[in-house]
Image 1 (cartoon, rainbow, N blue to C red):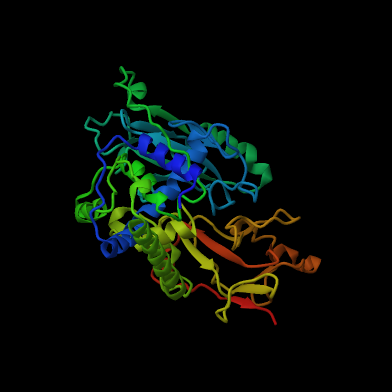
Image 2 (cartoon, rainbow, N blue to C red):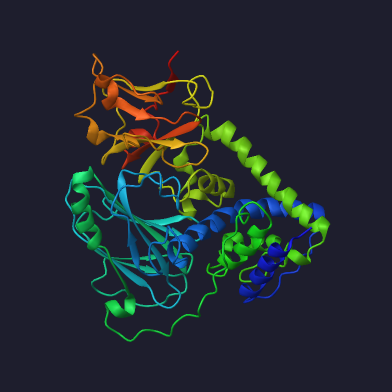
Length: 466
């Protein structure tokens, strides 16, 4: 039975999403269940992305609001456990955020020149949650430049002094800037670099008259259950209205239309029969079960690496389970050639990591530290919240820049301690505080060397101490 608040929400979603025709629900219940499973895997990353878009750029009174569309919002400090808008971002870089509305005019992003020894990147993400391009140290260097981001419908000439044009498959896109932060004393330098990040519309950049403004958007307010119920399909219709249909997805979208999914169409959940609604709910449960099995059998055993879950369309090859897994395990993950990511979920005995039950070590043999052209870091997360772990040391990660302070093994190797209880003082440089409960740790290798991708370098185990 649908309660009054839910009826009001569904009615409002129908109103704000009424830009397109209502897509009829023509599938049988058994067909609808199978289609809903595929549509949930397909749409979940897009709806999760909408939560971040709304939080960071629409909800001006919210605690995690960053900046309006086409304006950059900065965090002039590393992430800490209190920042909950996006999880799990890495705290070894300071982040800047730009939500781009490309409907009427491309944007030109200007990057400043930065020191050769500092890593920086701009990750460009379309509404499908695909990383469609990168700017920065690895891809364009540290000398700065002007880069134009255009939507799928833009037709025009590249200005002479623009270094590169990059096309997004969606008319709204996201740019996540990461600027390496060495320590607290480095904050002012990072702020200077962030102040050099500029964004302009193309017409402003070339000093020409602006094109006609795009239509005002009525942004539907997120709800607590939007990602785990058939409500998701209404938000998916809204998000699809900003995307360009892809040839490789025509058949898929035609299937989706038979349960009411279509770009810009209202999703009339309150007009479905109980049987139709149950078919959608069962399909969602089937999708979650498929992901749980995939995570247990493929990801937790490292047969599929975290890096395999992120990338552009060519890399992901429309593998929607991978895209879903990436969104579920951590939105906006880097592509593998930008950052290699390894997650310690289970220990060497196959048991979930838990700071209340064990202390753990990660041992790197001599000359087997993570091979990075930039740097590496190991970050601790609470497994239940996916947030950083509060601790009195305010230490959320260990990084290669701490190597001069680490205590090395007698043979030249490095042993890191992941535990809740504070170790003796002489062992504290190697200590990464764990919560008194389930956790996972993420090893990030920025600009990984070839031996990471080809398997020559092996990830050491998370070993419990008896």
